[in-house]
Image 1 (cartoon, rainbow, N blue to C red):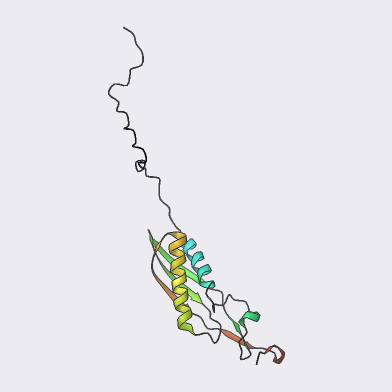
Image 2 (cartoon, rainbow, N blue to C red; image 1 turned 90 degrees about the horizontal axis):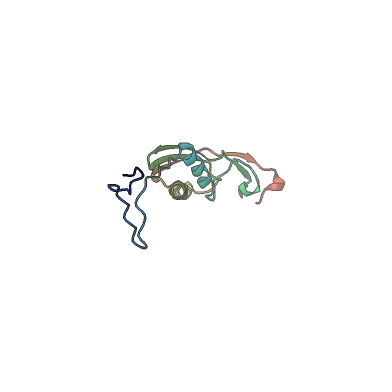
Length: 144
């Protein structure tokens, strides 16, 4: 009698995969998207919308009526629960830009970007427009 390795009797061999068949599911962990990441995505998305001020007062923010729009850069607060998010965004809008269309565009853009970049379902985006400060431009810089 010889002592040695057994031939593996009683150990089941995995069945070979059929050609082209996907491998069996393996739990590889999960991705957790932080609240802060959603807030950063939201701020960037809001800032991409025409009419939203970035906090700087430059030539692009001068109105035809001789007032320079000085706003506050967009900010956001987010709540994330699993694969769902809710976002509140604060923006300043260049005067005299109509607010309703800008708010709709911000809501759509934030929702789209959070969904695409973070993979989260967005339950809602609340948009608050902050007051815009204006200062009188010197006569030489007025467009009219």
